[in-house]
Image (cartoon, rainbow, N blue to C red; front, side, top):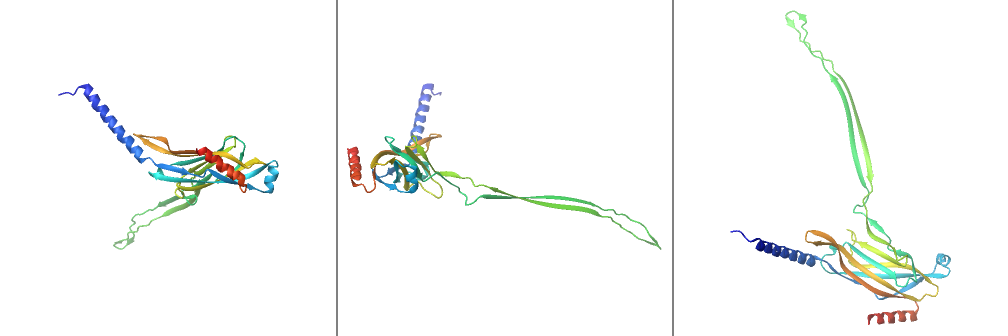
Length: 267
């Protein structure tokens, strides 16, 4: 008995939806869950050097050290391909002078790859002649087998040594954003490093001579490849953006103002 086409289509749609629901549920269950943490206030230490006085006679140089922690709540940290952290000035009053860590490359090999190739060339030539010649010695017939052998041989060995630079990839990529009013850091996992844990970032800013404090915006992202049905697509596993109030180290009034500013932001 044949099945009506409408019933067959209904069964097919129902089966497809069931497969999609299972696949989506598995993808969501396997997705990593992360949390970012950093303080809402931070002190900046003034850098006093002869070079800074000469390069910035009307400004001064201050250094920010920010600690960002990455906490894996669920899933596998290996599924996270990249952590991106952006630190930007809200009103473009200060400018980035330098930052750490800088872009860094690593390799899975401890040294360059050495390849040795041996090539042998050989050449030889040989010949031989043989026969019988009866010699009259009474009733004795002598069998003489004279032979002539000639040979020429030559063997050449060539050893080629090739040194290949070990392939490298970026575990840290960093640079400026917002016309040098901000900076970004891209952190990637490697066999020698992990993305989970605490990461210290250092940024030096050029600020006005009378600078005592400021406000920045810090954004953190965790990204990777998400499996959806039979394909993979880029996914953002976690995202956090929050303000950060800066104050000059040793300036108590600036510190209190920064803490009050952040208290008002949380209301």
